[in-house]
Image (cartoon, rainbow, N blue to C red):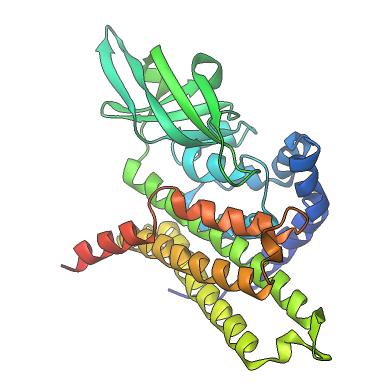
Length: 328
């Protein structure tokens, strides 16, 4: 596999980065939290840009570029859940601008005539309270359900921009037409890789802000970035991010190539991203002198997004265990 972007991918990265800087600036992100600004227009901008059309496995690297940039910006829309959890099951709906998410556990399906009835409650569903449709994973298959047919309650989490919900199903009727023929295992790989890339982007934002801070913050008449201890911490952050980024894009490449190593690559990416956020969170917080966690500092949004990614779909320790089993 080639690990360097080709010319088209570099152009795509530059285009996406420019668009994100324009459409999703820090002022908008803070406005969503502080003033209740509606992120709907931002989601529709992504649709206009064609970013919701990146549903095919062959476009996994192009999607990965978008996800990293949106992680860096602390995107407040349901793009991550839609493209990495719902789209693998029902891509045709996403291409039309429909937002979605996946319910991976907590719901059962029982045969009912020529269809099935869904019952149960799923917790910690990313964007479960605002997605238009849900892809519901059961022992009988994966079914699409309109959001209006379930009861969703947003859960309070420490990332104020992240929507996580408890979703309840009571006698929800589905038919064969609502069933997906997509590969469940492949969908999980895409979901894990998507989270890893989002975390990498958030960690890069932490490093960017930290470097800006240590260049401008002075002690004893010199920038604190000139101190050896600060340089070492910044270098460790950079190395951790580059390692996690390489594994995240490796996972995207295996998905694009339908490589049998994609299962292992997805767990490696999620584990590396989890380890990365732990180091970057701690060092970034320390180098800001604790100020980065205050409400007035935008660093808090990147810190919280990176940490939240670790808690979704299994943390670093869980995925390291899966990797160890693979090699046992």
